[in-house]
Length: 303
Length: 229
Image (cartoon, rainbow over all chains, first blue to last red):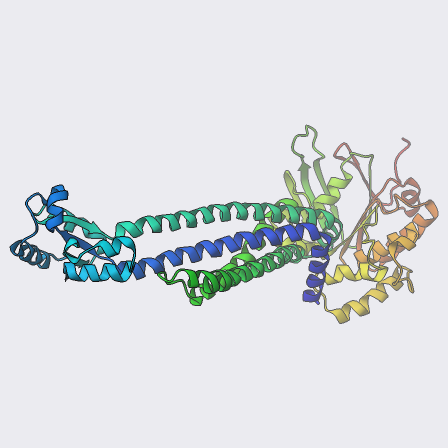
């Protein structure tokens, strides 16, 4: 009896405020889609960090014959075997260093060829123009300064380069986009909440006759308020399912079918992350309007 | 049944209290007329009983409970033991007569079987048998008020509060409503009725409580509407 009564009230209420309900659904859908997207973007940055930070390291480039003429760090001429040995020993003595790999100029030349193939610049290069280097992997990538300060001024060292710096700017860009999405989401959320409050107010006003009688005959406040709250929650749930569809569609069409084909260097987030965020989206879509309606009713519906 | 102890009600931003130092007692089964000109405090008196308002000073006891100490969530339960009828009927225009009466039972969670049984009974009692499927708009004012009385009485309340129930009705129809209220009173239900209808009060010869500018000026058993004024 009770449930049937409440449900019939909800249906009537939702239809009566069709335009408002629609506005609530759209704003909830957009804010939740943005919420999910920024969440997934954050996860994407984490994934990329994990993937790339494993692969990058700090490189110590040594002076070669060419550098001796051009680079101010290499005024004393090309690096000698003793200098290299000394640096390698010192590196191995450091705690932060996990492993050291030597790359000869021959290997560097080969890698360069592999990466850039037959470009005009590549074909004009010769192996002895390439620099020898140590590729240093750190236990804690954040502490690359230790290497820089210890070895940048050593004789025979041309430059200490942290490859993370290159990635860092990319991640900063992605993080910036995430924050922008969160900002827009917060704005949309405020809009959604204001719409819900207003919808509840209109709804309470148009049903003041019923609620007045309910109050007089002794209906409990839960019984009077529940239809309004469930009404808002149902609208929110519909909005949340639209948001879920947008997220799943975004993952399928945007990432799997488009970006993943275009950009091979990046490994993208998997479905597990998407599936993990969906219950959160639905829960927020259900609870946020319900709670907003509850507080709106305290103001607009006398019980 | 109802006891007012030195009740004063002061609304915010008003200098004169709506009720001032009112003390009285109404026993179970009584029929009480509440009279007084507009603004004398009749409505406030009734609203205090329904706990739509709280007193500024003094206590109101209804059905043995101190309303000041009654927590908000218990108020609906208290109201289920009261029935209310108003001048403007307060029916739902998009529900049939039977649905209007059933509504009062539905919203307090009564089982469907009981509703099906009780509604025709109470419509019978108020003299509307066979009109359950009509819409309120199709009925006369007197009949609509009977629906309202049926809805107020369907819970078999201990106390029926009527705020000018005949205010919108012609004298003949009013007599019909009064007979109905009298019959309800005879079943043991206490009736408190605020009214301006001199004829009815004089005819019925019941207890009369008169308020004037918020003060209790007369409390008379088997009274009349007013002295010569």
